[in-house]
Amino acid sequence: MNVLVKSLISIVKPVSLRPISITCIYCKDDFQDVIHPESQEPNIPLYVKRNEESKDVKKARLLYQSRKRGMLENGLLLSTFAKKYLCDFNDKQLQLYDHLINLPTNDWDIFYWATGAKPTPPEFDNEVMDLLKKHIKNEDRQARIMQPEL
Image 1 (cartoon, rainbow, N blue to C red):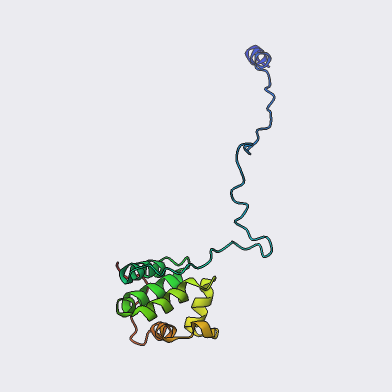
Image 2 (cartoon, helix red, strand yellow):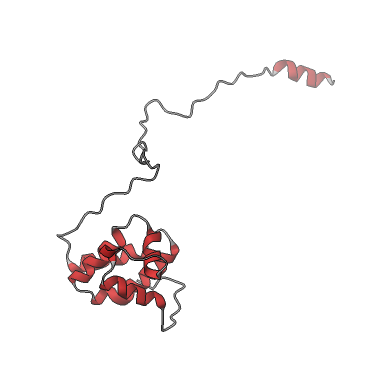
């Protein structure tokens, strides 16, 4: 070996590395309640009925919720449906639509009911669901590959 290399090796001493803890003793496990212990599924908040909401605020909220579903299929179907029908809904129809898109805990259920892949439960089988089923048939062959403009 080269004398220079030997001298460098003798100068550089190995450093003993201590294990570094990635947990913090001051941090509390804030995510402990996220998983439901029995079924190991996320804890979904209960639906809260908003009685004090004005009609315009309710329409705006439902339009937003129709667009932001978490699955593209329902985002496209519900946003085009809301754009077409929501402005003409009366209070009863708004409440039915609110229940339809907010009470089921699984978006796939809404999709399967609306497309007819599964039977619609009686509590959601109403005039709004009938309109949604008709909308999904797309008899006038509208292009629905993007959500409508706001």
